[in-house]
Length: 151
Image 1 (cartoon, rainbow, N blue to C red):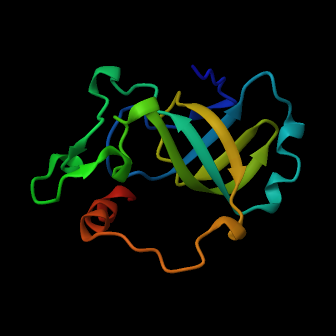
Image 2 (image 1 turned 60 degrees about the horizontal axis):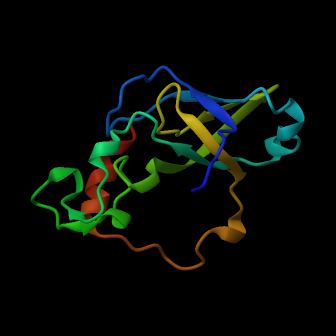
């Protein structure tokens, strides 16, 4: 058993779970156990990696096998670790966001696909050194999903 205490929470206008058309700005507000010094130097980075918990995902819908992404029969069945959806073991999400500004214990970001109230598990600066050096490859169905994902 692993126990993880959230480091913060998402504040956003988006309150409903929806797969597509993510847009706008969000805030990540640190929990009371952290002060603003936890963000010292973070404003030198343009992008951050945000690890969060899909807290409203139904635990009875965890997928452990293969399925059509978005239940679209035109796309191949792929395993749960090939999809990025909420019905995954441990209900963890990961997104790269653009850091807009820091205000005390709040980060203002864009590109966060998490709803209001989402627990944030970790925040990391995005470092070029961790990005792939080679070209990124993905199947066509993934391109189709992402075409409507961001507004």
